[in-house]
Amino acid sequence: MQPPSDFLLIERINQCPKLASLRSINDTLRSLLESEDSFLAQIAEVIRLDPSLTTRVLDLVNSIFFGSKDNKRISGVEEASIFLGFNRIRELLFATPVIEEILELGKNTESFPWEEFWKNSIGTAILTRELLSVLEISYEEEADYVAGLLHNLGILILAITFPDYFQKIYLQKYDSPEEVIEEEVAQIGWNHSKIGAYYLWNHHISDEIVDAIHWHDEPGKAKESPKLAAAIQVSQSIVSELGFPGLNKCKQQESGAYQKLEGWKILLADHEDPEKVISAIEDATDRLNQSLNGIF
Image 1 (cartoon, rainbow, N blue to C red):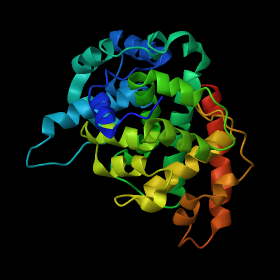
Image 2: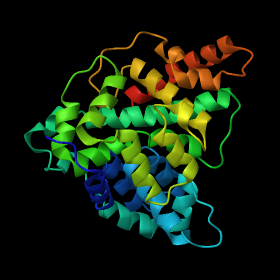
Image 3: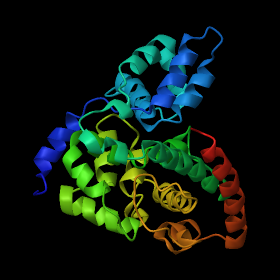
Image 4: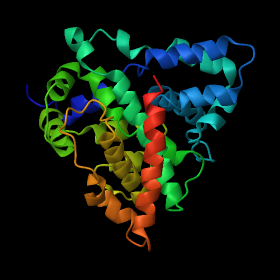
């Protein structure tokens, strides 16, 4: 198959149907919405576990303000949930398809470990926030967590909009994550980072988050938020080391491989005590490993 033209790519992404969610998350959220004892804070916690729902909640809120004089974007899931309220979230949930039920991927659907994709997304989100906290780098609202959660959204979009290309790319085995990206570009013309960033930009997500996601595999090219992009790159690498690589069928990377990444150099460029940061990361990954193993 020849790579699609940029025009076809953009058209398909623009017409991308509603992003799918994981069945277990949908079921949990539905139970909360049906309970009279639930609080919006609890509902926001569940939404934070899902890249699809998080994207749609933020898009729904920010589209209301888009084009207004106050062009500040909301990036906090709880703030967005409070603004929308129970009824709008309930409507959003009922209109959200379940990834396990998407039939367009044909007989190979079961070959893709979607729970592992979600675990990689959640783990990267948690560790991105932890890493930046250790470095005393802060972002408004939940931009750090949200950017980490949505970093691989382009893979989900690719699965929905170009299922044939998606299967061809993600059924293969690779020696490194870089080879996966090279194959994406060879097959599609864009890598998953660019696909995700374009989709999010088109859905009113903040420039800071869009930029970090666009360049999380090459954080030195980020313009709006290079340290956020760097933290995502490092966090994703560590989460993969823990045994949660998402959909990538790559060889297990050696322990501490994240310390050779461009993102690590960006984050530690002006830090006086790298060993202290490494120690804090090790503590955080121990906690994260237990959390991810108990999520689904």
